[in-house]
Image (cartoon, rainbow, N blue to C red):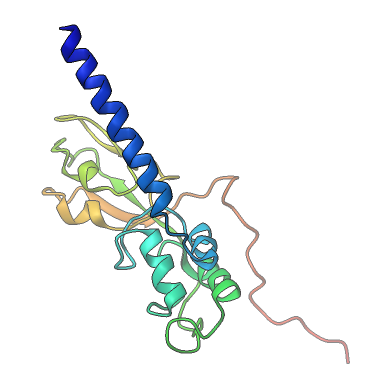
Length: 185
């Protein structure tokens, strides 16, 4: 028994040392622009942009392979910040933010009377915004939901819809004036 314990400890220390040396020897520094772009992106890794996560999207924007308008959950605000960091020429051309409308954030909503507790939705949710257990009603944490529609696609009873994010004191903003201001003649 002691011999097996000593052998496993020696193997663990030996492989750990080898991995530590390899990590330092073969370390590749990423460009600072990629790290800066990744900090701007929401960090939910929802995949709505077509990349595996926010890191992949940041690398594509930095390389010029993706437009700054690639992040649906971030919307116009994130696109404007990306233009400031990456420049308007990123993505293979001049960034066109005019096509991005001011959209209201959407979140998933579960109709409790239709939910069967199949657990397919919270297994699919990339941000863990759905809470529930097998054969019990599920609910959505609005602050964590990005509105990616992944849960809607797998719900067998169509109990999930997207609706506007509820207004609270934390996310309410004074609306912009709608008309023109009269001038004195």
